[in-house]
Length: 470
Image (cartoon, rainbow, N blue to C red; front, top):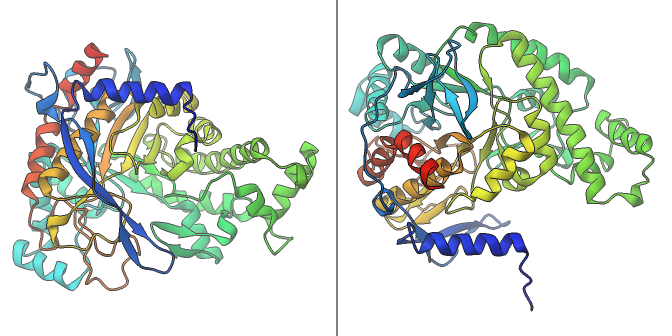
């Protein structure tokens, strides 16, 4: 079979080849897990992946990094608003901390106590109380260069720790508008990683959805003066795809608001069902996404105009659908992406996100699992490597790419604590995997953490280095 290379693909291959001969001097063996429809698991063969680390960057010299209260960069400052904001300065996107210092949100997802019996016993043995756990976890994160907490974190404990600490964690909140509405309405179900919906289409056109969001968002009033809150996600991994148009049109209930909305949209466009093609699907998807983002952003900003709206955590191929990027860019401050299946971030791809949306991105899930953890690593989407040292190299390689892109304002590693295979009723994608920086007994994966710290404590000087070398 012949393979035809487009100019764009050829350019990427040449770019990768050029990088391999300079900074990408390391090789790390990695493979992926495969989850079969019958519930069984398998793995691909190990392959060697070109990798770079701090030690392989030609001409890079370590520099001291002075930090603000919030973890911002004391060497650079702009106008402060008293809350986190985003701003493009000299060709690079930044988050800006409440005091006006340039900032990158370097966080862990699910900074929380484990739910299994083993987790609970280990927490009591190691920390005594939840308060002591939070105190020690804050120390662990800050001392290793992390400055934030991502999705599914213990917001209450983090807020309490902020009162006692001179350097608080900047945290995020998942609002789950559509998910919560679906729970109330009925019809949703659990699939690995997120909620499922009938025909894989959300209840976007229900007349009650907008009123629900307005009422649901009233709780945000209590957050509007919190300087430590980085921002909000409206949902996680919604099934927004090119298949949505047919998804609505094939709903069994032809009185369903989604079916009626899709049919009316086609009629107004003068398009028959047999004329539907990818161009039509894309146009409808942008129309639907615009409706979603306009409703949820309006609700958020009505009750909390001070904090960032970070989108709905795109996943899979969503990140490369121009209409979705345009739609979220009209309403959000940044585009959140759960970024899997790339060993090294694709900078050309990330550039398209910025061009389409007009906004920076924040990488809200990514990770790699280690064989030496003793866990089966049968759940989740991340890569699998042989050692915790390799996990640390992956961390450095991936973050270097994000910093190099100039459009990324933060990254959230998934996650703080390993998945415990003994936990009952765990969410399907979080059942048996080495995703954490600590294991199920709250013991640190030292090689991973050390490599993470090396990079984290150089993330701001690295922006200058890449700006000068690109």
